[in-house]
Length: 278
Image (cartoon, rainbow, N blue to C red; front, side, top):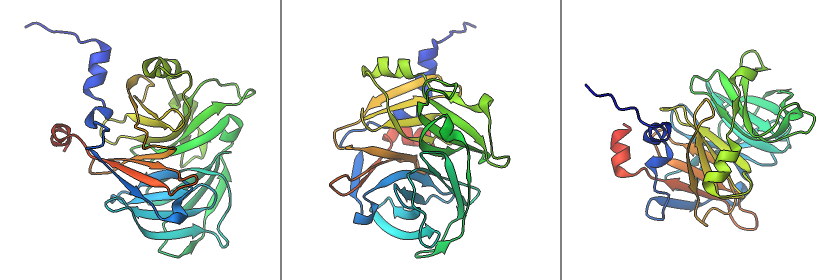
């Protein structure tokens, strides 16, 4: 029997999440969202497959139907709703987690339409390391990963990374944090800067997908920080601030509206890959 050892790059390509999508106009539906979602800044999927999103400036959480772009419900944290620079949302064990750019975490149960919910909050201290630009929960719901956009000069760290946070213990887990291969990403995409704006984790492979709005690109890495794939986004993405994978495999990317209405792009899997990932 002859055993053939494949190069790492080939092995990585066989498990790429981004390879499921062509990202062209034939595979995407892009919805214009209601006016009050103009400042959308993060996406999160519930355990039963519903999409929650957060406003950039106010702690209002919305449920969107990504089959038609319609608003299903909205609930607020506090009365009046908390105001802050919200940069990410995650859902773990039926609790909703919001993070600000400075790393303050807000936690609440999911509310009904129009409800003002009570909440807990605390300072994670991660804002001392970097500006937070996204949030995602681990597949087992034990960790939150904070997307570190830019390390602060006196933080003791450098480069881009995902900071791992133990939900139960409320503490940073340095050994679980993921350093992103920034230089390799830029070389492969032929860009001179990579500015992350959103993050999600694929529940099948554990791979991490990061969107960078300014460069209109995607990067996929493994849990040990190895680059798997990169993609350029089409001009339809004006300011991609949120990314999520639906339970049925569709890729969701949300763009802030700016002077126009925000949009939600829904990418279908390629048919062959859809059949292989059931």
